[in-house]
Image (cartoon, rainbow, N blue to C red; front, side, top):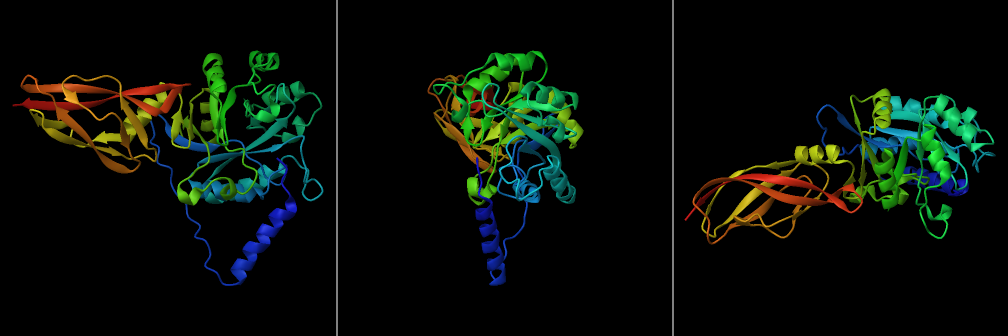
Length: 382
């Protein structure tokens, strides 16, 4: 995406004029992302693909750090293009410079800044992100295989970016090419973006599961973030959730290579059951798990959701003893009432019910929802 540097400068002039005219400045504040940790790991919120003025982006590297801080992220990777430098007449062509500039602000704001580069080639193999590189300049070589090999030798984690990007498809088909098999077999690719911006790629999701690739969800943001996402209204960029042993760059790298990732995009989580189920369980709490139902009486179960995700539930089967609503939304950061009704013929006594639900906005595979159960102890009386 080509960004006009003059437009960006005009925006800065406008903002400067606003301050000069005495308008109230915008409060610089951080909003936490409430997605719980899971056993043994901290859940880190990361965006591992973005651009600055040092390639074709529209902001200075320090802006990327503060955007991430304000939105509640833990880590970002600055991944400016290696081959595409449309602002080279205005800024340095030092391929390491954007990450160097961002790192200082990262230390001030406690945002982990990871050095990365986007190896920008036509399909196949398309665009590859290499993060945790030590020297981006060494990736500036003619042959893409040599660039990927150099990144690997530097210990980089390498991802296939936006495999469903329309500009690189043939007949609008997302295709796995022999070059991608080559990258995989030579250990030159460990991850794949199944979400880029607002686009989800089901085929890439299937490949990730089949080929044991880490799944990623990144913004690939070029413009100022607020021009692409309505953050103040609750909108958010796509985020890669990294389940790390601690909040450090080394722990993030370890988790990525071990495929301990999930995707947070819109109001949807995507990932393996081993990660999504504990997130759901650690978010949701039944406040009155013991209830009494007399005959066909209606009773309300209170369910609290501490996360930022509205969980959308559908019952899988008729549980037999009770009637349940056809669908149930566990609203983010709220406690909701689930109506439970008795049926005509039920034996008196106490029963432990495991109510089976699908969480339709939590995907463990393309078109496959996470399954869970809500546990209740019900005393049935006449």
